[in-house]
Amino acid sequence: MNLKAAVLIALICFACAATTVVLGISMKPIPDDILISNELQGSPQLCNGTIVEPTGEIDTPGGPT
Image (cartoon, rainbow, N blue to C red; front, side, top):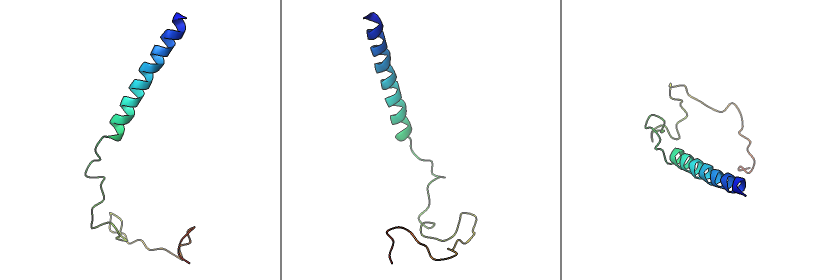
């Protein structure tokens, strides 16, 4: 019975530690250099200035026909 209690306590401690790590990672702020600026959103250019255009018709499921 003592082994079951020890395993249960260890499991609870592990779950608490895992939850703390996951919440810590998910609440970490995103660095500014990763954020996409407003002027690049919707622009067909990559960060190095290369213009990106589709080579043909874009066919996606559920898209306009």
